[in-house]
Image (cartoon, rainbow, N blue to C red):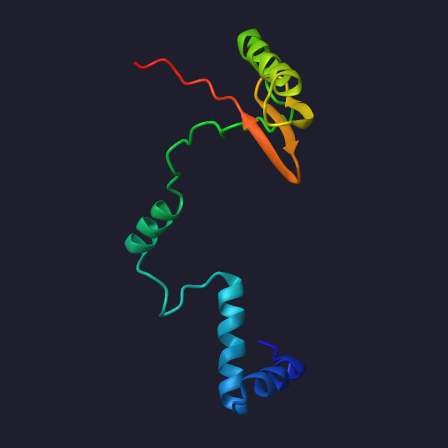
Length: 133
């Protein structure tokens, strides 16, 4: 077998070992490349079992979950009763209130009214409770 001196020199430099050890490493590498069995290889029956275990496939997984990142909000069901109540309260605050409400604004037609009395700002929020179960 022909020995590559450049390769031996590289092994000696990389592993910081002597020439005899580098030649042994070089010859072992060539034997492995040829597919020869080495003393550190597993016995044939253990090698067969190891290969069998390495090729075990996992259980089939479920299909991946598909998430819908739709940014459009679903349409809320309108509540004309709440809208009517908010409109009546806003009208009352503008016309008949004894507190001199100013700048009465319906900020949310079915939920909120904003107004001021003097220097103070107020918000009125209407909340409809759910029916008890």
